[in-house]
Image 1 (tube, rainbow, N blue to C red):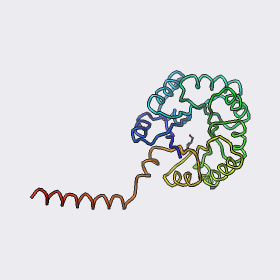
Image 2 (image 1 turned 90 degrees about the vertical axis):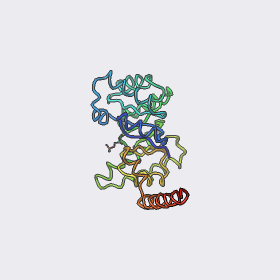
Image 3 (image 1 turned 180 degrees about the horizontal axis):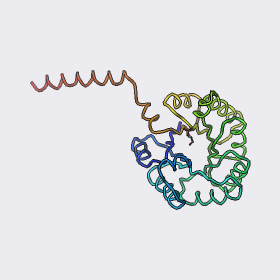
Image 4 (image 1 turned 120 degrees about the vertical axis):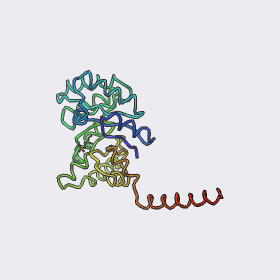
Amino acid sequence: MKFFIDTANLSQIREAQDLGVLDGVTTNPSLMAKEGITGQANILKHYVDICSIATGDVSAEVIGTEYKDIIAEGEHLASLHKQIVVKVPMIKDGVKAIRYFTDKGIRTNCTLVFSAGQALLAAKAGATYVSPFLGRLDDISFDGMELIHQIVHIYRNYGYSTQVLAASIRNPLHIVKCAEAGADVATCPLSAILDLLKHPLTDIGLAKFLADAKKTQEVSAK
Ligand code: G3P
């Protein structure tokens, strides 16, 4: 399973890239706003800055909701850098735009997906990635993980090439469950990736190994 980081924070992207486990980046307008990136020129520059840090695909989201606006915006975003994937919302004009981009060889990430039916449409339109938001479903007492299983199952039934990019991940268990379900990608906050490192028995075991290593060093020094 590929690991993407879900942030527009450059130092977090750098940290994940330096860890050697990063396969890409996803952003959205809320994440850009959180970093205080304002003004179209700064936003576009920020995408290019992200591409200069991360080696994989970088999702950049359109804000237009009408077909012609999505097309103009998406074509411009795609022209910024070869790593850019155009992120398009799951709306009627969005699906139509994904078909257009697919036919033009522009890669897309269909976002704001909350049902298997929506995921089916995204795959039919040829989206490169589909982003089901599992955490936001959990937030309203729907089983987000169940949706990931359903989409993976449906895509396998028909051999769709659209990759299942599990989004809105909140914790390390979500990541492990996505891997079990066969998601192609999990996009996560840095904290969830780093939380995968943690196990108390690792800490206890390492402390014991280091204490015993110290004893062996003391003996050899005598
Ligand atoms: O990138 C979209 C998605 O990951 C949003 O996550 O935590 O705002 O639901 P969240």
